[in-house]
Length: 205
Image 1 (cartoon, rainbow, N blue to C red):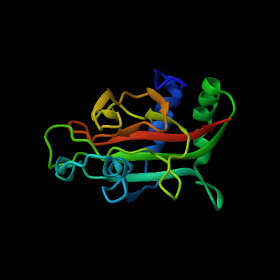
Image 2 (image 1 turned 120 degrees about the horizontal axis):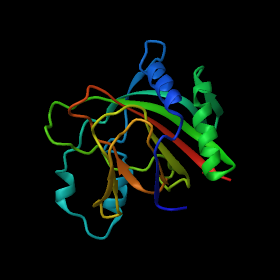
Image 3 (image 1 turned 135 degrees about the vertical axis):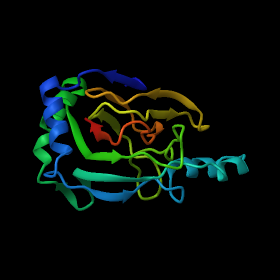
Image 4 (image 1 turned 90 degrees about the vertical axis):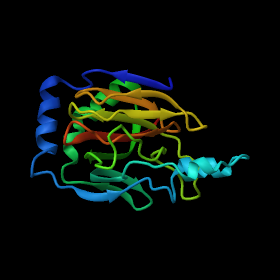
């Protein structure tokens, strides 16, 4: 597959609004989650496994990894775990099928981030890949990152040297498809109170 592909209006405009209204309502529960911390981030593992280690990475400051999360689907060693709200994924799964054909769903979750008062400029969260095996090796997968609302706080994409190679602003209805081995990181919004994103990880058949 191509390294990255961007789809505008990934689902219909009507469905975009229905989905946003639901996940931003009191009917859709969230929990705080601390994710992609420097202690176990893939970016750090790659960095420290390299031949040249620089102290500059130790001093890098990242935006807070805390976010509100609702897992709609998780496939792990215990089997499938589905949220009661799993059916709201239907239009997205249909859209993904139209792009890649048969696939296996590995994980789907809604993430909500808020401004980090420590920073005026956009500050990256920890660069990471979404899924890996317990031994730290990459689990081959494809990511569909869908932006639920118009917000600020771009998603950054990195090369193996942790240099930004691309960025995508969050625009309602836009979905970014990319190889799961690509290091990436979101940024907290500055001018909007909430940044909603749907993260879907799949294995292409």
